[in-house]
Amino acid sequence: MQLSSYEDLRSRLFSHEITCEEVVRFYLERIENHRNDNIYITVFSESAIERARELDRKLREGESVGKLFGMPMAIKDNIAIKGGRLTCASKILENYESVYDATAVLRLAEEDAIFLGKTNMDEFAMGSSNENSAFGNVPNPFDKKRVPGGSSGGSAAAVASGLAMVALGSDTGGSVRQPAGFCDIVGMKPTYGRISRYGLVAFASSFDQIGVLARNCDDVALVLGVMAGKDKHDATSSLHEVPDYSSEMATVSVEGLRIGIPKEYFPETLNPDVSRIVKGKLAELQDQGAELVAITLPDSEYAIAAYYILVTAEASSNLARFDGARYGYRSENSEDLAAMYVNSRTEGFGREVKRRIMLGTYVLSAGYYDTYYKKAQQVRRVFQDRYREALEKVDVIAGPTSPFPPFGIGDKTENPLDMYLADVFTVPASIVGMPAVSVPLGFDSQNLPVGMHLICNFFEEAKLLGIARHMQRSL
Ligand code: GLN
Image (tube, rainbow, N blue to C red; front, side, top):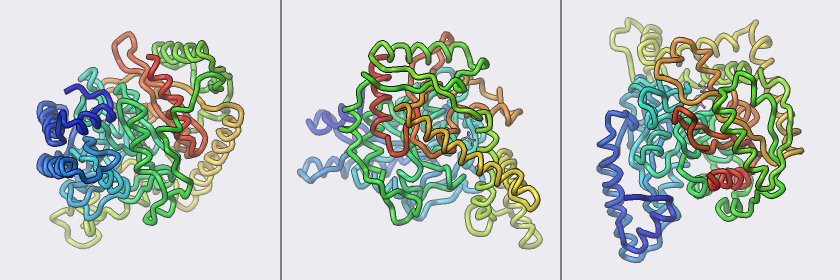
């Protein structure tokens, strides 16, 4: 079954050429055949088929159907689906079942999407390679010895391997965009507050956003439009009106488009292949009428430091709730309550999560708060001003998604700072809260995927996806 886009699938379902049940069985069989790739943590074999049958009945009996009718989707395992396992790829939540639906999930379900299962990820979305999962790593679909990126590595690999049509991920500093870049697909993080975070397990609440991974920008736009909008369960969800992304993005043209190219996004250390491919694409756009504008974003070198101070501070507070008493794993042999907390957390959390809890507790502690946390907050503000100013002069800021192509499994696990640098280009949009996307550009000399990263101003998702679509189309 070759399905080029959701539109293609939808028209075949409507013409009764295929049924939802056939589609789901097709995907479930592929998932089964790829079991060794460890892409899914949980597969909803039975409920997905049941749901497909119910949808087939609706169509047969002429009931009205939703915008995502029959869309086979994968959901990152830090997003809640009622009654389904919600592990965050952590031992501490290994057997935890969600008691409610995330708002995003609920809205997808209301439009008749089908959930195939929950995807592998870095534990609590902390990582850039999917290697921090308590359920083991996921190989890159294009080279099994390499990582698929992270933390939404399972979601990216699922879409790239044809084990789901569209997947949800979460993006705190690049976790949707970076794996999309590593897996040759589109990955978009909307403006902070665009999609409700209710039911997304919190990592760093002032950064976290649900994002979409798909093969093309049209599918991203469709799914985004369904999930976006105010939610009474999330006070940070925005009241900003939700446009019709699909029709609005079609009005974006390359002619006259001002593309800002920050020199900080093309450092000398940039992988030469990545640099060549990204610059080649930009030159192509120039030929099509876009204007390339050299810009500068001073102090970009502080992004990673500020990010890791702020997110670890927030994480240390957010993860305090996992204490063995309320959720998931509890250590068996503890003499008293305090020991039960300590042992449950010691045994339940993985190495990277513990590192971040310690780092976050440290930067928030009396005596260090001003030096680290407050300073990082000030840096965040400076970044917001700089990006706002830059986007007064240009329509979009462009650069590579990652400074290097997918790296080898194990290559960066012993050096956390090295791993953190994988996000240098994706972290700034998260610091400022602007929407950003990774667009697949093709393959480097070793046949590894390379992605272009684009940032637009707050709530300009339609423009962002419109620009991204031009890049993808003319491949
Ligand atoms: N790799 C980054 C980190 O480890 C980003 C993670 C994310 O976006 N969830 O924090």
